[in-house]
Length: 173
Image (cartoon, rainbow, N blue to C red; front, side, top):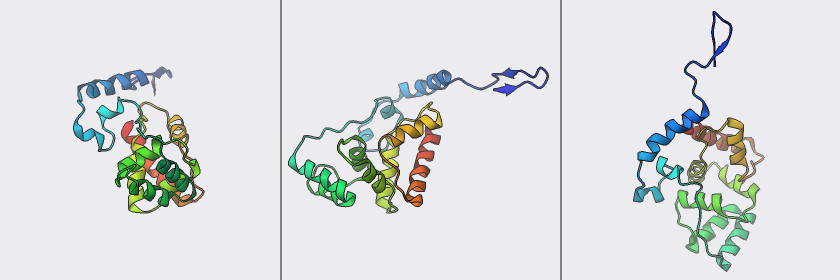
């Protein structure tokens, strides 16, 4: 809102409402078509409109054991998932697993995502890209992110997570 200097009243000016911003974003997204590459690449406009990702995992003893291992030691749990061919050794499938799988300890997910290793930072980037923060207020977007995992206690890990969140939030809005 802009304040008019002569009348002292608030004027909408060029500020768009949330509904106008959504309509403007929906128009280009409607023209986009899904490509085969959309399955493996980070979130694109055509995939954003599809809703949250899902993961088709069949219950198995290997999966249960790997989840238990992740809840004890996250890196070893991910390695066990990869060695059992439950997920691929690629940042996007790992991020999708962390996003979709029930039964994971939220604190361990946060610890894993906050690690400084380049591989885990790529997983974090893909993980945050799975969220659609379009037209959300900052506090609502942050709550949606933090509903999936708990922030770790270490300040550097929190900073890494918040940097990726801020980058994605800015890109979406």
